[in-house]
Length: 166
Image (cartoon, rainbow, N blue to C red; front, side, top):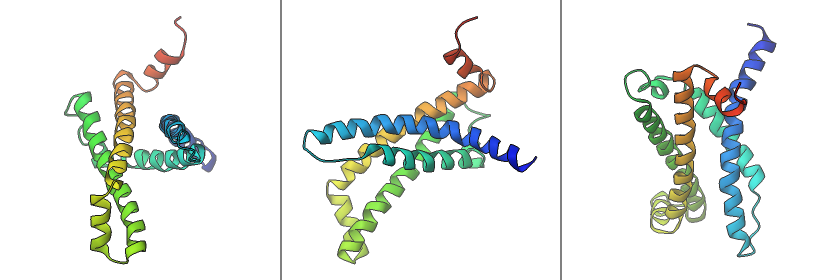
């Protein structure tokens, strides 16, 4: 496979996934922006949604090629496989978001234990859970769609949804 065809394949594979996550994150962050606007707090949703979508899409595509990403596909129902993936990916999301908050708390306090307790005991945990819940719904929708599409035949579900009846 030539370099150009490899780039086209990657753009198609990662690009479509990125568009899905950008759309979902865009909705979530637009809602956040609208809520914060009532308190006169500026928030830029576009760049956050774009960067988040690029990162999550690449991780989803890469993990989809590993055993952890395909473990339940052949032996379990579509719902169980989608739920498994959603739980694993959301758990990783929680860990990353918690680590990010801990990093900021550690920079302020200089003590790892104190940073852990500060994040755990304060409202930071509620914000993390709210973000994980939104991302959990996004993952679940993605994995259900992808699973249904694979069982119908790649691209069939997209044609059913987006093409007019013949």
